[in-house]
Length: 387
Image 1 (cartoon, one colour):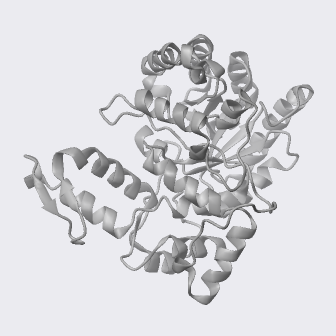
Image 2 (tube, rainbow, N blue to C red):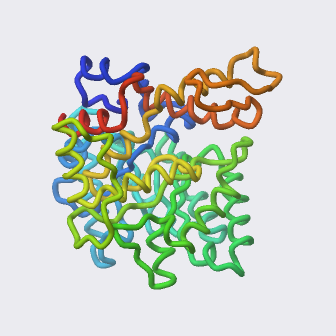
């Protein structure tokens, strides 16, 4: 699979200076962590789940979470587990490689139980999403994952979700974050990425952000995002990929504030219609939040609706300007540091301070590609939606 692989090769050639690379479930962990992109969640109860998975893959989805936790009623869990076993067997029988598939469980015992029940179709499973992850809850989850790997005879990843009140409350935050850090460091080879449960954080204070606002407009949420990145997202080799929070809205609500999406990038006919559609579906706020995610050190995003996937992926593509800057900074002859004017002659590139940014940018460029010089996110988005 590859990002934008659902777009015709000729169209990709017009969009990309450097096309996204191909990858699969067996690729190195750093590649998969960077490539997760818009991770689409789906309740595990869906009766045609196998069809849904392949349908979304054909539209550009490369990672999905099949949820046994908050998205379904407590009483539905046994039937949902049985459904997962059937749907995995169905997928396995079709002989088609699906996206990266993860199961969001409730308790550690579900991990080994499901791996046993999946049988040969476990080969299609990339790992598990672990909810309300703290040191106390996390260790049993990770021990169960270790056992499940032995049962499956293959690599399985964990994606812990940071969403517990202990991480949010000021008096317990430092101890809780450091406990999580020690736990994921112990199991570093099995932790693919860390996910943020912003809905649960808001719930602790009876809050819910409106579609006109991003997670960063809710100060108590922005504060915990910063704290998580501070402890767990460092660029010194100790950090992990931390993914962006879910965007909850996917249909039109009454708008209070004016649209955040400027007209200037959309001035040509068909893309102006795209701007209107994005605003009508409250996705202009999503676009702003995606940009703020990246500015705050996050990569990828939790998504609960297919319409959110193309914007996340379009804004994950590295611009030609970013790519040029990153390459200039990382040239071998620049190993001693120094300052240079960017090839676009519009900024200063300081080699030592900007090195970590450049390395992350090239990693993103590998999996999402580099846009041609005259291509912007509107072109990428329009091409993705048109397919």
